[in-house]
Image (spheres, rainbow, N blue to C red):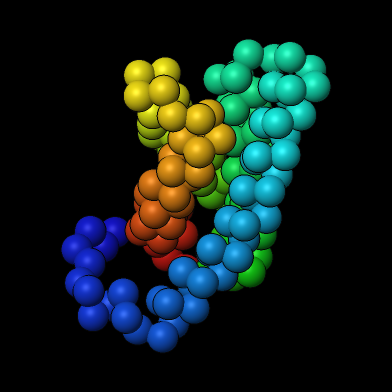
Amino acid sequence: MRLLFTFSQFLEKAFLLKFLRFCIVGVSGTVIDFGLTWLCKEVFKIPKFIANAIGFVVAATNNYILNRIWTWGSTNDQVGVEYTKFFVVSLIGLGINTLILFIFNEKLKWNFYLSKVFATGVVMLWNFFANNFFTFAGV
């Protein structure tokens, strides 16, 4: 597994294309995440952090499927192992997301959804690099 990464590698066309695809997939995940979070929190009156977790997990599953096929073009026949790796990265991302939400919404009194936008941006970077160098490292 490659742990070192240089800025020049980031600027390579293939890597930028992969990052762009990841971002496009991320938009679909963000729509699912925000939509499901809103539905659970506002309509079903589920507590906001549980609603956030539900939205995040469903979006992560969607993102795995789309990223496996389109972003990384993985043909790994150990789908369960690959999905588990992706999900572990996503769970760590959920922890980061929840911590940021807690700090910005509960402590700093930012609007919940504004806090969620900020958290989503931070977690997007974590997810891309962790998945690129861990989940899909051999692709």
